[in-house]
Length: 102
Image (cartoon, rainbow, N blue to C red):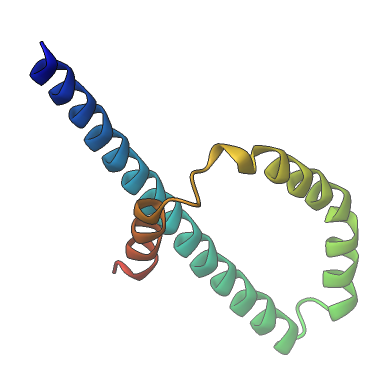
């Protein structure tokens, strides 16, 4: 009876470790892709400004009009932060692997 209980506890811990690692890995991939997309968007904006298709004041106006939405997104992210097991070593390892994966 005790060996079955011990095996169950060990299996639950292994599953928890695997899920934590995968969650960190996926979040690392997501952030990496978001940074890449942001870099591409920034390059497009710089090229459009350089050829005169848009002006810097247009970009300023767009960012100012998006400010309320950014504040809502920030407050939502802050309220959901407690869900992530970011204090787990396996989450951090998965996150780093996700960031450096090609």
